[in-house]
Image (tube, rainbow, N blue to C red; front, side, top):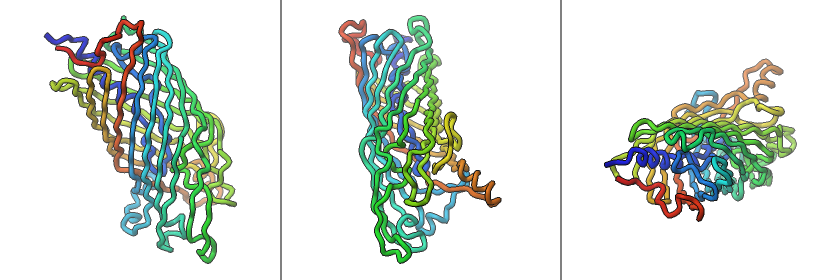
Length: 380
């Protein structure tokens, strides 16, 4: 006979890996930095007991090349061969630890590698000479702590957690590259900061706020949700977009949301996920000024995924596919539009999809009642 609670717990445990590996889509020129949920678990059997911990890694890749101004795609950029192409790779290592009942802490160490190919940065689109710039290394480390609002013993099939954290400016935010065909004669080579979209860090301290929860719906389905907002009080980071331009890189806020359903298949340890996700950069920050160069906007995606569990090991694979992409007006766009009386609206390049793969392993405490129990395994 199937154990009802084991099925529910296992299903939600599998969705836990999707939550913990939910990283921002860094949609190309709309430079959303990576992040992960502090929770590290989203159901009663996966909620860590004091002394228990989880360690994992998540890999992501995307290629951005489709230019949008507002929600309008500028297809002529690809037709003319003048599009900007970003290849971005992310590898996040995260650790979660329960230091008390219902309280948990987490840390995420992200590494990045970016390649950016363009013409306009190397003499202009009319000049027709395409080159690449690169950036790599440590990005902005995040640490945080959270609390499960409902006692798991009283509510084994539904819960909600709130987490607060700090984003540290550990990533290099003035990474430099070589730019060709510079100067009036287009015969100079400059070394200057690369584009904001491929900078490993943003140069400011930030505060993260996260809300995540789950509800079991019968024996085979579960609903889960995740909300994230990064508050960056610092207005600009002191790095000029171009030397002598007077326009510095902004240190923008970021936001994301994820809602979806898990379905546990008859196959042992296998469940499917389908949901929607939103990630973006606002034109105006909650705290501090909004001046400086930024490319605000958002992307809405449908996200199919598959999850596998075996004892303490969890694997997940998902491919969010963009449905809506919108490069909104920035603060400076609106400011200059008011000053000149002429329409001003910058563009940005977005990706079609993201490849996301994660691995997580759970460690039990010697004093935990879970010790020796295959916490994520289905039993019949």
